[in-house]
Length: 169
Image 1 (cartoon, helix red, strand yellow):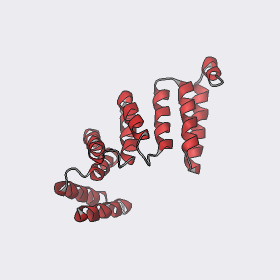
Image 2: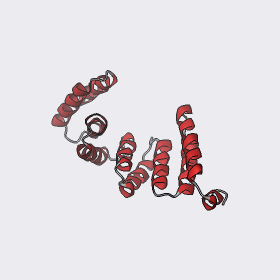
Image 3: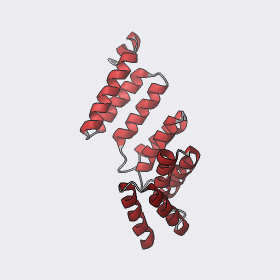
């Protein structure tokens, strides 16, 4: 198992160096040694999603990461949530986000932000606004805070009179 951990550290360095092909090869090597190494599945999911644009493989690796990590690697819920929202699988995204919110160490601000995005996709603007407010309360990053303020302002502009009234009750 020590070899796998060392290889995983090399993956981080390769990603930091933007050497994605080396990172991918190392992740594949890790999975040959330990097919149940969930963090490697998460990183491969991210590579397939953001670099290779193979969304079917990305989805599969995120699912395997959740399965094998058993709630010990919270970032996978954020990554998988983004993918599901991007492809309009809002029901599954909401399920994954809710599961992620229960994981210790989860980035609750980002998960609530994702829930806000889902509400906005469903044109439930008052709910989106309130959920962005929850994200703001969980956030400790100045840039993310600014982005949330912009999201809330944008959603308010979409709201009709009755939606705006709902914010007060």
